[in-house]
Image 1 (cartoon, rainbow, N blue to C red):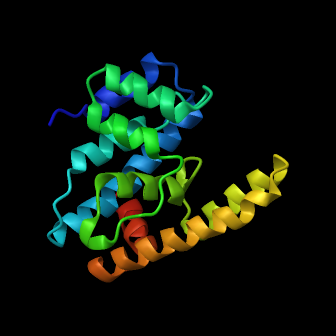
Image 2 (image 1 turned 30 degrees about the vertical axis):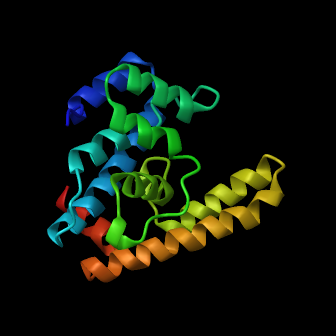
Length: 180
């Protein structure tokens, strides 16, 4: 399958005026999803890590627009990247995560997005607290139970990944940071 390279994704982010802070976020999500995908691939899982990288890089390409997931998906599809488009379209509402034996590239990009705050990996607890605080500050405290339900499913998925790779995802990301 044809996926844009990381450099091509950077060119697209620039072409469509993605703000710098959003580009940094996209890079961090892509890197997080890619590292986890590679760790699973080493354990025998069949994953397209090029797709993981490109979809992660482009998932918020139009984040400054209303319904950015739909606008971004439509844009990326029009550029010929159907698989990336499908991931981008669902990244804001994706649920539930697959069980590990059925893990997909979509699972990993969406997981990366739930583990990254702004431009750095922070793990699930900090990211979810940030999302809850954001909802409360926007006058939507009723969103908290829904967010916590998504957190439970995300934690279940992380637990399954950790069982397979034999290490905490947090440690995997620390090791990657030290390698960079």
